[in-house]
Every structure is written in structure tokens, then in C-alpha cells.
Amino acid sequence: MPGLLLGDEFPNFEADTTIGKIKFHEFLGDSWGVLFSHPRDFTPVCTTELACAAKISDEFKKRGVKMIALSIDSVEDHRGWSKDVMAYKGDAGSALPFPIIADHKRELSVLLGMLDPDERDKDGLPLTARCVFVIGPDKKLKLSILYPATTGRNFDELLRVIDSLQLTAQKKVATPVDWKPGDKVMVIPSLSDSEAAALFPNGVTTKEVPSGKKYLRLTQI
Image (cartoon, rainbow, N blue to C red; front, side):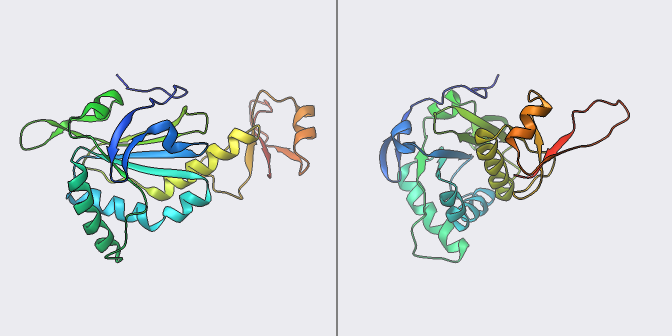
């Protein structure tokens, strides 16, 4: 069963991190947030992921998104691993630009439904899966993506969906398949044609389909 469903308020947990003890809601403040989990420190796929996240951290900052990672090891291990991550990134000696949560008791991993039953450590305990949670300024869960421990995630896709989430939170639109910022968007079905015409000054075009239904409406934001 999932630990959290879309629209649920994200738990205001307390945790030790590489920047000290935090309360999650206070850490986020009025920002959007992204929490991404890792099976274990000093592992190959996780290191590539954190290095990528560090490389594009300014892209998250531009979008008003605070980043935080989670792994089941200790803060001390996280600090040592962070040095490896930044060296892999080609920036040895620099600090990792976001904190890492310590979850050595796996309490958060259980609370948030993060454990991967098929991937286990040397003691037979389940590893943390590669979860991504995007949390809105209202502290509610806006997006959840769950990868198995063996598959690294795509951070370009994460930025793309954050762009969609932030746009659709403000405008009465939805984003179609493979949408990128600047592409046309879909008018949501609950808007009448007259409401859409008033809301979208760039005009609305309707794609003709065999059913004759006028539901494929596009506009440029």
C-alpha cells in the first residue's frame, strides 16, 4: 500500500540531516520542495544521481524548489559520501548544495512507503527505493514517482513535471504528452468555450476528431 496519496498533507517529520536537525515544514517554508530517496550511501547509481542533482541545483532554485535527499545511513556517512559525490561531479572540495536526511532506523522510509522489498542489504533488510516526492507550498503531495533501487531516475523529467505542476497550479490548463515549457497546453474540459475564450487571449484551437466531440482544445500561454 502506498505510504502517501496525491493531495495528502506531507508529514511534518523531524530528522537529523547534514545541516542539523530539521522540521520538514519549517525547512520548506513557503517554497515548493522535492525529496528524493536513495538506497544507500557509497553506492554507484546513487552517486551519479546526487552528482546530477547537484549539477542542476540552480534549475530547482530558479523554480523556487528546495531540494533534500534521504538515505538510510548516518549523517557522518552522508558527509563523507557527499565529498565523493562532488568529486564525481568534477567539483571536489565544494559542498553539496542540499542536505541529506539520515534514516538509519528506516522510520521515515516506512512512514513514506519507500522500502523496496526486492532489494536487500547484506543483513537482509530491505533497501530504500528511489522515491521522488514533490511537495507544494501548501505542504501537500503534488507528485510521486517510485523507481526500483536498480534504476536511476531522470532529473530532466523531474524539472519538466515541476514546470507542469507550477503552471497548472496557476492556470486552468493541463499539459499534453511530452510537453515542455513554451509548447501549447490543453484547456481543461470543465471550462466552457466562452470561459476559455475569455481566459486565453491568444485564442483556443480545437482539434477535429471522428467522434465530433470538441474536447481537444489547445492554447498558447
